[in-house]
Image (cartoon, rainbow, N blue to C red; front, side):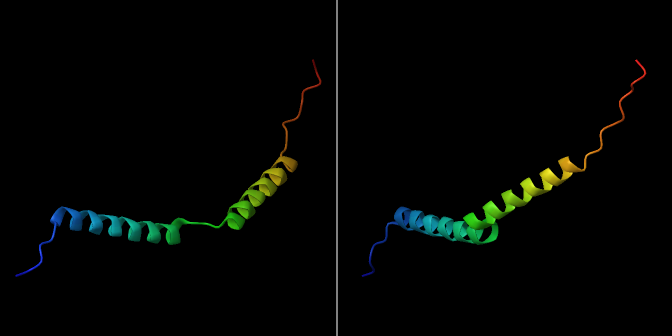
Length: 64
């Protein structure tokens, strides 16, 4: 005689496994290390500082 299997428990276990595998794929695809995040933030700050430094203001009228 065959062993009885609780299908609900089997389905839930399968769903958990599928979710864990999808999470692992997303971590590889979208994840960044802390060092990469810090480096990107430093680069954004450097670019913003550069753009602020070369910003040209419109000439002011002194003929009031």
